[in-house]
Amino acid sequence: MSRFTTTIRVYWEDTDAGGIVFYANYFKFFERARTEWLRSLGLGQQQLRDQWGGMFVVAQASCRYLAPARLDDLVQVTAGLSQPPGKTSLHIAQQATLHATSALLCSSSIQIAWVNATTLRPERMPQPLTSALNTP
Amino acid sequence: MSRFTTTIRVYWEDTDAGGIVFYANYFKFFERARTEWLRSLGLGQQQLRDQWGGMFVVAQASCRYLAPARLDDLVQVTAGLSQPPGKTSLHIAQQATLHATSALLCSSSIQIAWVNATTLRPERMPQPLTSALNTP
Amino acid sequence: MSRFTTTIRVYWEDTDAGGIVFYANYFKFFERARTEWLRSLGLGQQQLRDQWGGMFVVAQASCRYLAPARLDDLVQVTAGLSQPPGKTSLHIAQQATLHATSALLCSSSIQIAWVNATTLRPERMPQPLTSALNTP
Amino acid sequence: MSRFTTTIRVYWEDTDAGGIVFYANYFKFFERARTEWLRSLGLGQQQLRDQWGGMFVVAQASCRYLAPARLDDLVQVTAGLSQPPGKTSLHIAQQATLHATSALLCSSSIQIAWVNATTLRPERMPQPLTSALNTP
Image 1: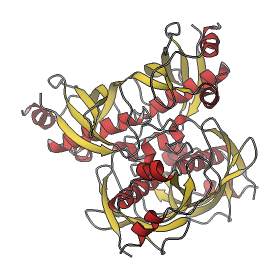
Image 2 (image 1 turned 90 degrees about the horizontal axis):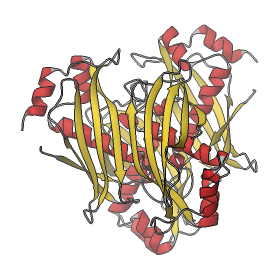
Image 3 (image 1 turned 30 degrees about the vertical axis):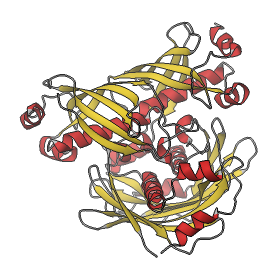
């Protein structure tokens, strides 16, 4: 399945006293990439919520860290389906690589579930959402 | 006016590649102290919102940084009114000191305004809120 | 193996526009609990670094999210070995539960590796560290 | 004095349960804009540190909040000197505006000081740094 790529700069806020990007912050990078990937498919999340009363929440997240990124580094972050879209959730594969060397920094797998924004209960994804995701 | 004090530990998430607490994170520490100070007066913010449909937003924030804190440091953070409560906003003085030495790390002044949680328009603070704040 | 527990309050900084704790922030909570657990064993991380020139980095992190936490919630976070300590890394199991109801919020498994703080290369954990972790 | 502008997207990580950007996070946005502004002058911060052993720390920060930003908003953030460069510190004015409407979200004034990266003691800024800042 096709992959979306976005570029993220490492700022002071992303680093910790170890001199490297704090491990939890990669999940922010991954979320940004997922958001831009959905936007590239015409799926703005605020708009989805206004229109359908639903939103995505993360059901499962994992990351394997292979190499550190540092202040001022440019990082390429990908997002794409790792399975065909389910009825209520999506399985997404994401990777972060160092722009300068293409070294793989970390590799992640994320499951997001569509929920009612008020009750937070899982719901079937609206049809236009599934369609947009199924378009090659 | 009396001052509330809470103790905050510096974790990896709070530091940056300079080896010290990232400047913006002191505003998180100050917010935590304000929240615990309000709670100590019987004012839970989620409860205020459920009951009155309002919430506090920050209207003005400033901080002077005098000395850095590092990983594992214990920091004392204060909160207290710097002026009698206004009709729609509060002026709050806050300080962070190093627990081990009482060295002043930074000193802040914050104005928070009471707004309607839906429209975000300023509103008069509910009377029980003002009463709780006026009790010596 | 015995488990360490610490209590964490949910503040504004932890939540997002969905009204719940942002998924990446649980990894901050887990890191705080690991730090306090190590401290409870006499292992301060800044001290370990000063003494041995090494530090822990996260090699692998995963989390399954079952229920959301909200502003003002008290969350219990555990940390403990899920396997006997390895030569260069530790496998840690962590859970977050809602203090009020004991509902399980999320469940995590984390692998941290001991690295040289300058080169970031994996190294054997110093003997006193392994001893402290092996003490029942 | 001339002003640098960069564009920042509001992601989930930036918002809080009030549905708006958390006040402390604007200081992250301002830091990103200062970093890109310095980079646009040929001043990479990691490079400055490697070459001169120094770094900038924030000495003073203030912000007046006028209107909120929300998820998916595009925000323009400026950075520029508000005074000629001093010997050891810079006074910087910064603003965040909503891209869609040009509405002013908040207005900030920041003082950053050049310090020795090891001792954190204030030092005279290296000459090439001052030159780059003085070039119109």
